[in-house]
Length: 147
Image 1: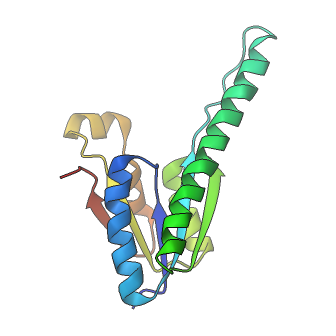
Image 2: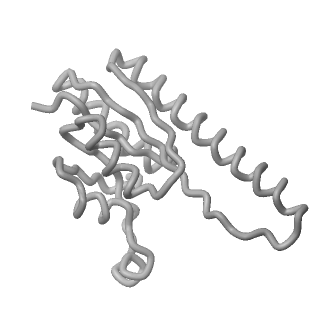
């Protein structure tokens, strides 16, 4: 039924809770998994010339952390004998998930939900909410709380 699963992750402990579900589904369906870590780097206009170096360092740090998260997650899937690839994208996480799912022909997205309250979700939005409303393939939302 499922041949290609997209697993967007942030590398947190709650993300590991979701990962267990992805591993289980991928094993049951012998599905390939694409791990996605999207990070946002808000471009700001530096006030002073010296700020440029700091921003470059910050962006390099964010990218290196993203690569670390993807590599560690990918290794756990390889250890479980699941065909896996990982992608790092700089950009809006919700849009990135929807775009990658379409580009990679994924037939299922499995992701977590941060359990925000109604007001916070309304004001800030939610990656999982965006994906559910914009994805053309099924989306499984796993509550990210740790039991």
